[in-house]
Length: 350
Image 1 (cartoon, rainbow, N blue to C red):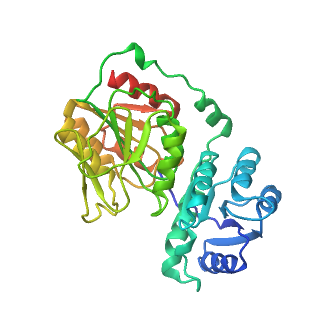
Image 2 (cartoon, helix red, strand yellow; image 1 turned 180 degrees about the vertical axis):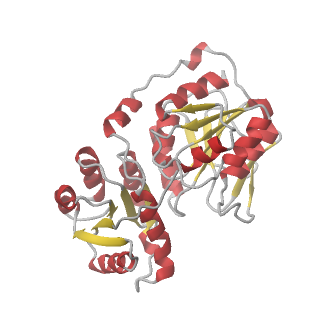
Image 3 (spheres, rainbow, N blue to C red; image 1 turned 120 degrees about the horizontal axis):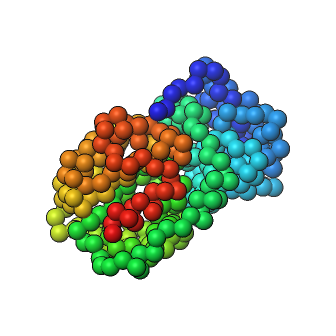
């Protein structure tokens, strides 16, 4: 469960643009709880400064001279694990894959720095400040464990029979979710016998890059869901930006441009509730790391429909808020570390 840290949050800003350094410093230092304690103009400086400055969080640009943000993230997470918020521009599509490679090495979240007000306006800085405060309280997962999880073995689905069109897996995730999704989807075999539907909260403009990254890294297909699209086995459908995604009778996706649900569009609750109502006992709901409570009510619908539910455990979560909310409602069948979830999903669908 997320808590707001009470002490001063020390930020290491890694950015080669003088203008963006000024914008970030103005926004962050305006909050009495935050202090920009150092600025690095390239990735190498960031790697050198991190062990001495010991920041509570790092904002990391991706495109810099000498050493880029990806390599800096790799080195910092390997030797001095620190929460990292990537500040990149969604306008530069070629660099988005680099963003998600950095996330695979331990960066926690991404924000489009193109949305920041050059005058350091408070409105544009509110989201940045909220992310800084929430990510500072996040746990850093040991990178040695992450490497072990990549090697986890799961049952061979070829020993089992059939395509389970009467079953579906639905996943909801937020902060730390892209890493968790890679660990889960990356362990599923190409002939996974049912469809998967997903809501992942992520900054607008970065979804397509995340989907492309996951699709390249996984044996199953990963794509953005389309309205009226048939849900096929071995395919993961991720809800598009600014739409509510549901499943409907006949095994198809439904997209609706309707108001946010409890602040979320797409909403995990909306998706999971539709899964529970449509697939009943064939529903498998999974709630992963993330801030807030999204997904808990939807998990209740699946539970009441006699489907199965899984929550990621606290130790392997970056932020335990969403799984904790589902546990508080007593709607979780299995609480598992991240590395155990793919195996449990496979056992459930078979």
